[in-house]
Image (cartoon, rainbow over all chains, first blue to last red):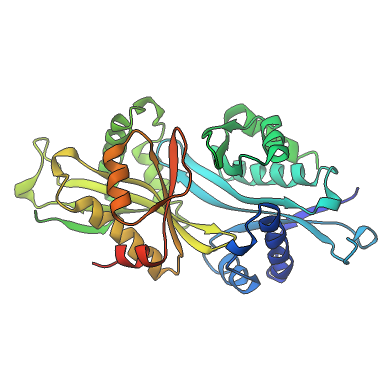
Amino acid sequence: MHFKIRPAKKEDCKEISRLIMELAVYEKMPDQVKIAHEELERDGFCENPFFQCLVAEVPEEHKSKEGFTVVGYALYFYTYSTWKGRSIFLEDLYVMPEFRGNGIGKGLLCKVAEVGKKKECVRLQLSVLDWNTPSRDFYAAKGAQDLTVSEGWHAIRFDGQSLDNLANEAAKI
Amino acid sequence: MDFSIRAANVEDCKDIARMIVELADYEKVTDHVKITQRDLEQDGFSKNPFFHGIIAEVPEQLRTKDGHTKVGYALYFYSYSSWAGRAIYMEDLYVMPEFRGKGIGKALMSKVAQLGLAAGCNQLNFTVLDWNKSSRDFYMSQGCCDVTTSMGYHCMRCEGEALQHLAQP
């Protein structure tokens, strides 16, 4: 399936907000979502943004049954490790169910790794719920290390060779 | 004890680097520290810094036996929750052993909370090692909740009333 990954624009925030809610539903916590597109517009597109975002878009002829062409997103921000230095944290990665299995999730993840590499980040971190086997398997397959084994959230990291490999994959998209 | 809390400047990086190693020693992972004073200068004091710092300082007459007056620090950055919005993440909080029990740690953490609220943040997040009972007890006493129970690091969050309370001077 043909798709494009590009930086989000302010105008995408309504779509991103929709996808955020879909992800929260998937994670069984929709009542935890307290912000809407207005906050995303304000916080992601100001002079010192709190986050960055990439969106995955499909052409009109592949739009979803409700008519959406923005079908996935990755929301991330820069962090810092006082041990290792510059890092990137992947806050959200989501692809609408009907568009999965087409490499969109991997494309988004790789693009984030690439962006991080350009900024000399030495880690890409994220968290995943322990019952979320498909996502855990997805990240493990990409060389991620599960740093915190628990009953709930997991902290995940890409660094060294696995990060380089991931960033290099972005060039193939 | 008389002490002051202020924003870190680039000249503080030498002492911050020293205390980062002290904290890593305390956390039993000294060999994990790969960054240097120069990395801190570049990454914390450029146009788009990756982090911000707060320093706790004591007057000259209370300096350590090695002559240090900078005796604690907190290092933080702004983050984001796609559910809750703006957040602040406290990466490190450290006070030199001989200066503990004087309210310096609490003052540093409160300052972070205050700065977070001033910036419109809804959460203060950080992590702590599960065997670090004194730190865990300290954080719990400030009204935080343990969001991830594990065998290793814990993600902690202060929000709502606990955060407002923490931000009080």
